[in-house]
Amino acid sequence: MAEPAVFVIFGAGGDLAWRKLIPALYNLFLDKWLPEKFWILGQGHSRRSDADFRQHLRQGVDKFSRRGKSEDAAWDLFASHLAFIASELDDSQSYARLAKELAAKDKEWNVRANRIFYLASPPATTEVVVRELAKARLNLDRKRSRIVLEKPFGQDLASARELNRTLTNAFDESQIFRIDHYLGKETVQNILAFRFANTLFEPVWNRRYIDHVQITVAERVGVENRGRYYDAAGALRDMIQNHLLQILCLIAMEPPVSFNADEVRNKKVDVLRAIRPILPEQVQHYAVRGQYGAGWIEGQHIPGYRAEPNVAPDSPTETYAAVKLLVDNWRWQGVPFYLRTGKSLQARISEVSIQFRPVPHHTFPASAMLDWRPNRLIIAIQPEEGILLRFEAKYPGPAMRLSPVIMQFYYREAFRIVPPEAYETLLLDVVRGDATLFMRADQAEAAWAVVAPVLEAWGGIRPTDFPNYQAGTWGPEAADNLLAQDGRSWAMPTFLQCQEDIAVCRVTMAPSS
Ligand code: BG6
Image 1 (cartoon, rainbow, N blue to C red):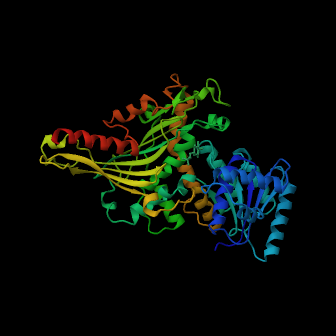
Image 2 (cartoon, helix red, strand yellow):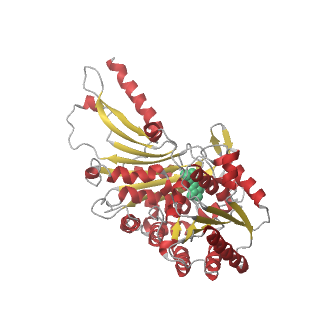
Image 3 (cartoon, protein in one colour):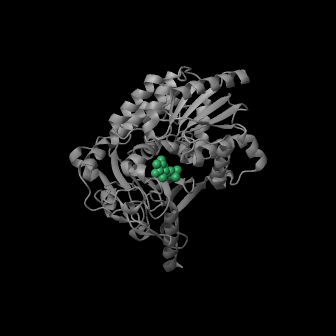
């Protein structure tokens, strides 16, 4: 059981607490992962009673918890640990009061509890909260006081450095937990298990056997009600700088010596530092941006991005980004990593596709090879979580004919349990003080350095072709060209691919049966 903990959530009236944090804490509570002694203090600036706050949070739990609607008895017990404090984020006195309340709680519990300061407030308020926490001396206990930050972690390299300076002036790096919620996803963590707990794959995990890697995070949703934030960010900042680069790190990193937070993070930073900088004059050959126009998704008409609430009618912000990256080290020299992400696409799919090289010599006659395809390993992150391996088999029948088949592992089938949400894993890690799955300062900065030349180039030239893809498609044509110039194409996402493979099998059966 974890040590006693107090969570102070700044901006607890907002969406993040409602949709993610409280449902995650509630599930941890139901699963008995939370310490027996815990207290959740939500800070917000509108006045409301504890009862009103709890009621609001319960609605969020009922809507977003993986378990569905909450039950009265369990909720009431959980809710007795919840309280609301109305204050302004820049009001020093409220922090002094908070310090007193926390000290009183320690006294009541007769133990020094872990204090987790969770910044769910707008990014612009981070500096003031950090400063005020320090003024109230709430930063001083290096072992027990922790601060948790959400992305966006800066707007670019310079602002990320500045933010790191602000944070490290008040907190030690070991107290700072920068969340990238992708790192809490089961399948993303499973990349480490898959690579480093098996002997089978590591020997082929390099430039000799791998042709290229594709990382896709496709979203069906548009910008929703986040136009204000998103229009100043765009897909490169919102997704590639963090989630997709983190996945790339897990795929490309060297084997860590141990599962120790710094060891794992050191190996990841090595990857980011090995990524070849994109030269300003080459950005157009390495990166593609897109913005959705009106279209249809599942029979529903979707407005174009520029018609979304809080988005400028002539917005140059990209809702789609694709980049080609090269990792300059022994293992990956010459193996391109293609990353793509976008909103209002045809399907919600996140997956990594590792395409192996063709066999060095074709043993079989051309007639046997009509459906031949190179081996491919797919790490499916969502909506399905699993791993699939495509290889060639002999198609049954008197003729020698090869056909791709798929060996599949799905979490839901193999373990028959609903995996925890990313936020559950990450919040529990914060309670335990385990920073393995969190971004260290140098990691965040190295990731900004990777995207910096693209940000700069895109920021300097207004796109003239926006919108350049229709909602409900797979993105702009230029993204296909990014791979076509290398003689490759984007892999069809897994389940569509599986369907296609089955179709291919049927077609090949026809002449021989
Ligand atoms: C967030 C981005 O970090 O990740 C959102 O800000 C995006 O724009 C979201 O929709 C995607 O997360 P998930 O877990 O739904 O893939």
